Length: 383
Ligand code: PLP
Image: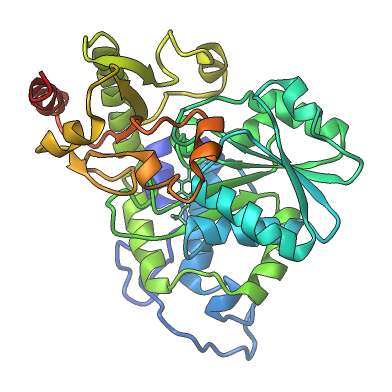
């Protein structure tokens, strides 16, 4: 199938299916085997080699969605990040990370890299100068997260890709918040595109998974380390993830549309101090977001006015769940300092601009009017 000409919902529904040659079923059959004959076969198949039929098929869907040649499916977003980074760099290499990034990834870098002799530093902002100031003779990779978790900061993909090419560095981006529906970093020159598929790709708060996409050359390099680390995803969950991804574009387009409307509503609310959403004209990086994103995603963060108790506000919500993680069909809300960024010290959080009262809101597929009614009744309890 020529995937480049297909519309986005057709790619989600059909690319990367396992063909059922025996019974002609309409969906992919599930191959749970951990043992395959290698006699006269095109490959020596084994789940930890990332080449079981279901893994290979789903990787094709992910690669097509990210406009890349190849992809790999992992057991979590953190497995995708750790396998890719350990596959691409070695002792003595240096990586530039952004000023703010997902707390678990930050923790992985600061806790594990010193054990392997991998050097790293953090850009002090998001401009070209901030990234270029960190580049050293041994810099091998520049890592990005845009929009970033939880403050929705935007980095200019084209700018970083050009800077990296000039210095012969690989670029890697965590594209989880944007999703391939709203942003294709490969089109702007990014080399490696990562997702916590636990989020939008899974989309129903019931799958833990991760993906990496890129050129065949880079994916083969990451694969050769990944088979040693063993972070592949079980085939049953791969099969469930394929099912979830058939509705990825439907869900994300709906979530993005509702999020933009709710961001505008929150921005004018008299109990809200600040809203962080890249689709708002008031967002400092709106122009860059507009250049590289088709829509602005289903995630936003906000701070209540001074003196209002954000935890009491969350507890007062009925429909919107006070819950970990994000990107499900159900709306959820959390405090990053209690969850995603809990592993950071208060000083590290302050440096990243993450206030204790900040709330991160993941908009689901519910009706906008029902979400607003729930927010309104929770605000009324604070008066
Ligand atoms: N990247 C982002 C932006 C995330 O929000 C998360 C998890 O919350 C991860 C990576 C890690 O993914 P996982 O929890 O699937 O390991």
